[in-house]
Structure formats: C-alpha cells, structure tokens
Length: 370
Image (tube, rainbow, N blue to C red; front, top):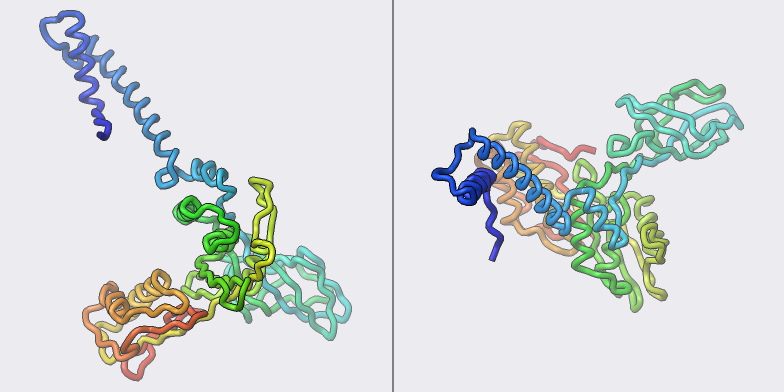
C-alpha cells in the first residue's frame, strides 16, 4: 500500500487539533493564535524534512536521480558522463620552401571559431598539410572540407589563408542528462558478460559521438564480431569519421577503466571489425504537396529524418505507412500525394536512411544541408 502523504495545511491543522486536545481546550485555536503560529512553523519544518527524504529516495534510482547523483550511480558501474570534445581535422596552406609552421598556431574561420594546429608542419613543394583541432569544444567547431581559415597572427613565409583539407568532425557537447541516464539503465539491464553483444554496445558508446551501435556476431566467420557505428550530426548525417571509427576500435581492443582501475575490452581471441555505416539517400518525390512553401518543406524534412533516426536500422525496412504518417504530421502540411518511395524503404546490411531531397513534380524544392 502506498504511503499517504499529507499537505502542509492538513499537517498544520492536525498539530493545532492535537495541541488543543492535549491542553483540553474548549475550541481549536485559530491560525493567528500563539498555538496556530507555532503549529504553522512546526508543520513547515516537518514538510521540509519530508521533502528532503522524498528527494533522497529518488536519488537512489537511476530513473529519477538528478545529474550529480547519476554520476555516483554510474561510477558504481565503471561509467562516467561523456565529456565535450573539440572537432578535429586538417588544413592545407602555402608557404616558402622549408618554412616550419609550429604547433599551436591559431587560425580563424569566418563564423568566429578558432582552430589550433596540433603538430609542426614543414612546407615542401610550396605547400603543407597539418592536423588541427577546434579551440572550443562542441559541435560549433565542426567544419566541412573546402572552407577557408585565416591566420590570427602573421607567420613569416606562411600564406595568411589556408583551406580545410580534411573536414573537422567529432566535435561534441557534453553528454546530456537523459542520454547519460539511458546508458546507465542499459548497463544495469545488461551486466558485463565477457563479450556479449551488450558489452560491445557499452564499449562503443563510451566514446563521445557514437549515437548508434549494431552488433553482428560471426558475420565475418567464426570468432568474429562486427560492430557498426553511427554518429549523427545536426543535419541528420549518420556517417562517422574514420578518426571516430578508430577511437572505437582502439577502445574495444582494450583499455584501463579510469574509475575501477580494471582492464576492459574484447575477449582474448575475438576478432573485432568496427565498421562505419553508409548513408542510404532517400529522395521524396511528390506529385502533389499543399502547401509547398519553405516552412512546410523544412517541417517535412525534420519529421522524416526524425523517423529515420528513431526507426532506421541496418538491414531493416522503413515501412511506407510510417513515412506517410511522418509527412502528414508535419506542421503546415495539408495534403500530399507521395509518388516515390511508393513502398518500404529497404536498407542494406550496412546502411541507414537519410533524407536527401524533396521535389514536387519536376522541381527540387529542398536539399539536405551539407
């Protein structure tokens, strides 16, 4: 039977009644009386104590604990909140022969983000390429290839403008509370089993940026484990970078848990293949869409990509009814006739669906942002 809680008003009245009975008063004192004031103060303090007890009770359980107490619960399982990481990539610049650009050189993008070189680079043949990382953590530092960066301070013999040769990726904000909570609940429901499918999911999602994991045991032969990973960016692109794939592979291969001090990783003898997921580009072709303004198109694209992220799995179809329902529920959409896809969206064993373009008749009205 659940505990019956009482309101502070009920508790205050009960105190006044109890005191009046104990003193054998003819009537219950009012709230403005001395007994009433004392009863109100005592009721308030008791209520505060009860609230604290109720709060502490919630902190015992993963489903109801706040962030600080989630960290304590996670530590019992050798887990921690994934911290923010800066985007990493590479830039190419021109310069005088044999001039060295030193580690720590700062570059700036037009969007206000700063990037710092992480190695020395010597100009050879009039050009050089060097690795760099965003100065700030989070997704704001992600940058596609081909963008221009400008030297913050001039360097003799080095051109003031460089080009992003390898996209800056993997920049991530600190893990949000609910994602952190979900990871802890998953581990609690799937305790370590020396290399079970769930173990590989836990190891892969330890790495910031990994949003989806699919495990295929023995897909490449006896003793093999295939780990497919996805990493969604703000535009719904799920294909992770090679650097993220390598981080996951290295982590699964084995590491010392910083919390427990114990060795964790794949079982001896298991051959693990960490595979980057591919994008299955999906074009929505309407024979009729009303209205077809920019706001409606964006709402449709957002709904469909949310569906793809929620229900898309390698080797699994996206049902046509799910797709039409997502389109119909988009804000602004009044009526549509979807010409293509006309049936389920089939995903290959290494594919996740991504909305690519929206067209009405012969006109392409929306395209996926890069």
